[in-house]
Image (cartoon, rainbow, N blue to C red; front, top):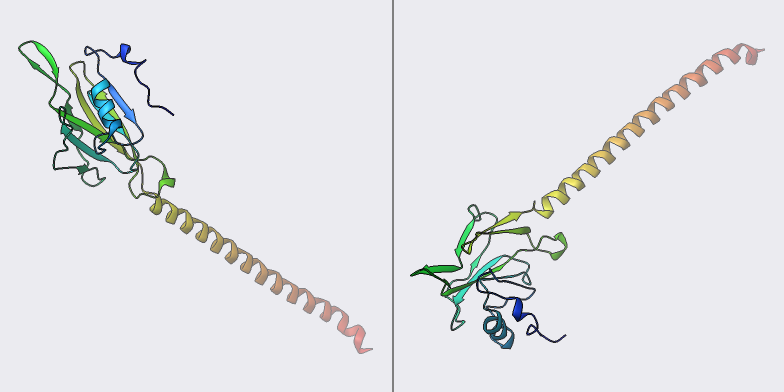
Length: 190
């Protein structure tokens, strides 16, 4: 489709927080899409999810130059919520901060083949401050191994039970045959 946001621009106000939600990351791209998003919308924050892993990109709002650091989110290191100020107040005027931030939310789907899955939780204050945290899902493979171990254990218990039943029936059969032989033995001697 055609990237057409011109009809939606009338709804964007600097008095309200503008969040761009995109499948593909915006800031790491050098191209027309990123330029149009930044020039037409100029959002407070960008959220995307194409990479299936969580990252934090930041760059200069005016030049779109990426800062040197790109921080990946990790389940082991992600303990405290991330706090981002999207606006600054100077001399009573509210302005967008010079640093533009994009949060790449990790996937929540087990089918994407990544080790760490989670959902993103973002809470905005009226002043434009954002508190973001990943809500990490349990790892896929330990759960699959637990299911496999449970199925194997249940199967072994079932087979052991069947073996015990078979031995009990075989022993009972032998006892019944002996009783029958003992009962008919006097008749066979005649």
